Length: 241
Image 1 (cartoon, one colour):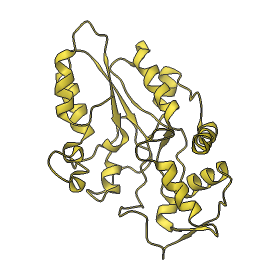
Image 2 (image 1 turned 180 degrees about the vertical axis):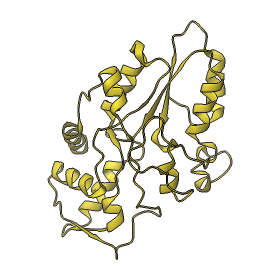
Image 3 (image 1 turned 60 degrees about the vertical axis):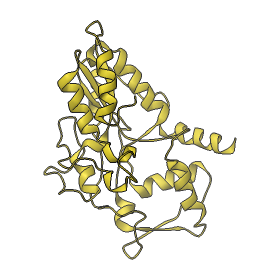
Image 4 (image 1 turned 90 degrees about the horizontal axis):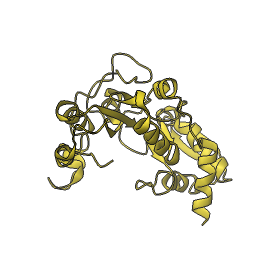
C-alpha cells in the first residue's frame, strides 16, 4: 500500500519469498501519458480516449518534484512508474498492479470533497468555472469501492501478474461532478462555464485523465459494492457528523 518511491520498494523486496503466490502493488493512474500532458510536462498521448492498461505511460519522471520543499520531501522522489518497474524487474513472485483513480470519501488526505464543497458554498448564486476545466474529465472512485477492488485483485487467482485500472466506469466532467456533489449535499447546482474565468489550478485542462476500467470487471467479475450515489450520501453523513 505504501509504495511511493523506489526506496519504499527496496524496503519490501527483501521480505518477499517465493512461497507467496503474488504481491499486489497499489499504483496510480498518474502513470499514464495523459497525466503528464495534463501537468504540462509533455505532449498528449498519440491516441485520445481512455487509457487502457497497455496505454502510453508518462515520458516525464518525478511529476511532483517541482513542488518539493526539499530532497527529503516525499514529492521529490515520488514516481509510480519507477515503482512499477522496480517491482516488475526484481520481485521474486508475480506482481499484480492496480492503478488507482482519484479517490474520494472519508479520510481522504487531500479532502477533495471538502474542497469542492467549499467552492460551491462560496458561490450561492452559481459557480463560475473555466470552460476547459468544466469540461475536463477524470476517473474517480469512492474509497470503499477502491478498497473492494484491491481485495478482489489480491485474492482472485486470475489476477496473478495482471495489471488493472480501478475506478468508476463513467468518468464525469468537472461540471457533472460538482453538480452531483451539490445535489447530494442539497446545495445550489448552477455552474456557469466561461473561458474568461481563470482555472482553479495551472494545468492543461484540455487533456482529460480517464482510465478504461473494463478489464477488472470482465476478468474478475468486479462490481462496486457501494457506487457513486451511495458514496456521495455517505460523504454527506460524515460531513454532518
